[in-house]
Image 1 (cartoon, rainbow over the protein chains, first blue to last red):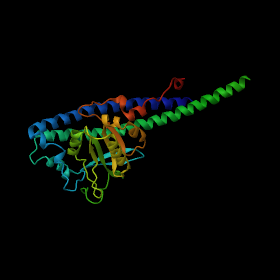
Image 2: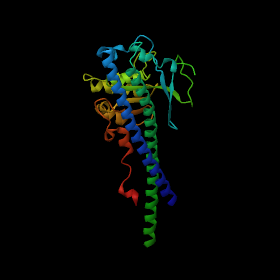
Image 3: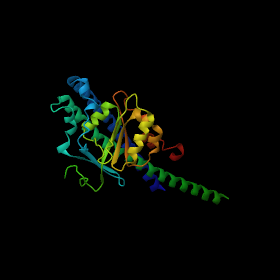
Length: 156
Length: 132
């Protein structure tokens, strides 16, 4: 019983720590993506409102993602793979000489992608820890109920 | 490692090679596409992104989100939180861990942890009984 409680305690601490990390990660993601938006707006002012919009997305080439991920269910893990050769293809949709602001925005969004992967990993971790803790709590409850039952029988 | 072609590149630890999808306003989608995640499916020509503006219907967003869930080449769906709110039922209903769903802030709507589906699922674990 003691070891059960110890396990629950340890997992609970892990869970709370991971929750803290996730919230910090999401705050950083928030800040980074804001930088990205800010630089897109700056680039739009430089390039002209109509030159930085969905109308520039290229539909003619085969559009292939240069940033892909590798994801496994159990154990849960996500890794990013970047095809450096094609990573500026999307940048080129908006003109061959893009302003620095647009490149900075691209960088911010690339960082946001990394943070998103980290957030996903931590999210999944938290859900797994939660389900482990719940199982142990259930086991503890069953144990306590049995103990109570046995004690009541003894008293009779 | 070979660049993207007909066959997926060999992956680092044997996981399946997948792409990220994004549902957001124009700047959000443009930004992530700059990051290199945009793709038109080789056969169906369907995009892995959806731009949501004031004319987009919630039912269209719902259909697109569900279609992303059903595709086996999408590993993560990034969705602006205010858009996830519009289809909260469907987002909450997804309980598998692949594709992973991540709610992100948008330009006009900062991220609010109290509305996040995943965080809501992760909370609410303990009751007073458990501390006896």
